[in-house]
Length: 84
Image (cartoon, rainbow, N blue to C red; front, side):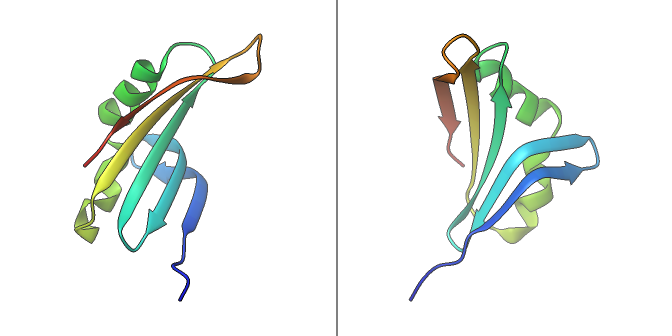
């Protein structure tokens, strides 16, 4: 049996848009990507704007993922995960 992933880019909330949300029967992952700044800045935005609140009613673990990109290298330079 294959588990289903629900992947939505630019998911709207009442306080903005998260960059990417992945829903799975075992959890929700909320991603924020930063081209300038660091992974901590991305995590702080998820918290400040309450992007994860939209999914609390599901009763699943919610994982917040902040990802920073290096513009010169055009690659991921860092990421941080807060597991919920």
